[in-house]
Image (tube, one colour):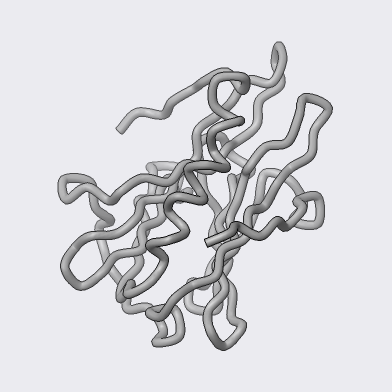
Length: 164
């Protein structure tokens, strides 16, 4: 899949609706996985159910102004022909209903939905946010070790609940 570049006025206003529509289906996941590019950065993160259905999280780049771009979270249904190379078991608390919050970046050009926090029943959290490298996604969770280099410092994002 090739990266998509789009204009903020065409895309940024709709991501909130997309996140809200997927929020209703945040349960019964049993596995997770990554797609990793040649530069060893994650380009996609997957949450999958035992039947193979699930969600794919990625980042699209949005032009805010000339030479100013930002990563915006994209959520799609996972396609069977585009899956991670390896799958890992999710902890039991992440297999139950997850509570979502948007990570919103406030800019001079408007509010951008650049990430998502999914909270499990025990309070443990999965953070998905655009990465410091274009078209990459950064993941922070107790079950997914590794570096965490978001596009902006995590305290620059405002958490906003998603009504479900």
